[in-house]
Length: 128
Image (cartoon, rainbow, N blue to C red):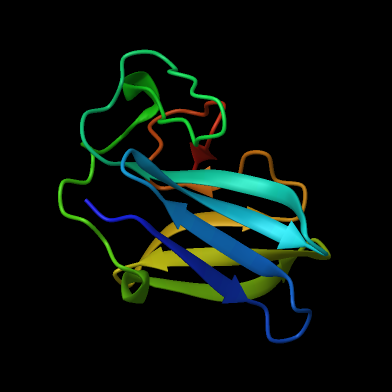
């Protein structure tokens, strides 16, 4: 399982997507001027929990009922991620690809954004 942090930077605006993976899960955070204004869960590592397990200061795994795919068992690395920036209805967003497959979309104000790995809309990701 891999821990890493990665930034995908918009070449036009300097807005970033901070992708953070710890030993439990991975999230993407839309950041502008140092503030997180959008987020989306990308995947869990290890077993999907049955309920939301809060841990102060740490990202929270998406519960099993909201997960379409089994948890990722093989650690991903920063080179597995790519971002494509675009505008939707005048709002800048980033389409996030993992191993060349569209996995998530998050933009300014999306709390949460959309993820292919979500089975139903939930607190950490909407279905893509």
